Image (cartoon, rainbow, N blue to C red; front, side, top):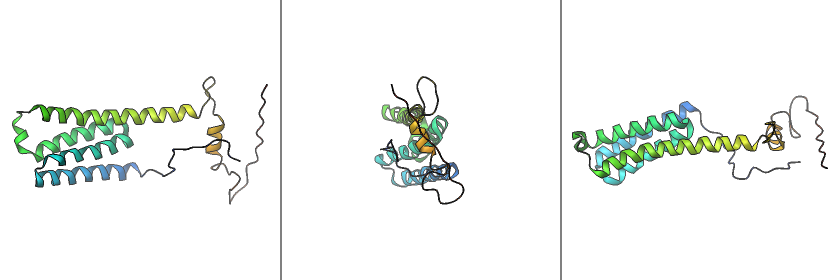
Length: 159
């Protein structure tokens, strides 16, 4: 019997870090080629997608490195920006690339910390019922099809 719920959790496994890095690099290069070919203003906003992906998967380091890569590719795709005569919009774009990477990484770190705090007791730091129920299937829970079954009694005392 499950006593807690995990609403909001997708339960979808994340791809490996190698696949995520390859996807972010491929997306950056595809956006660069598209940006250079079209020379249209809205294309530069597509750089945010790989920045968010890398910041989500690789945290702060991934967000900053991908943002710096996007800045470099954005300037290489638009040769008129290589004269270092930036307008206000160009400086704002540079700041936004970095800000999106940092904010996404920070939000991901905070979400991970909140999940960890939700699995432990505030006072003792010991794992709670939610943590136990999350690990129960891996330990050979009630629906395990192979191996010896783990028997467990859960006793709660409330005064």
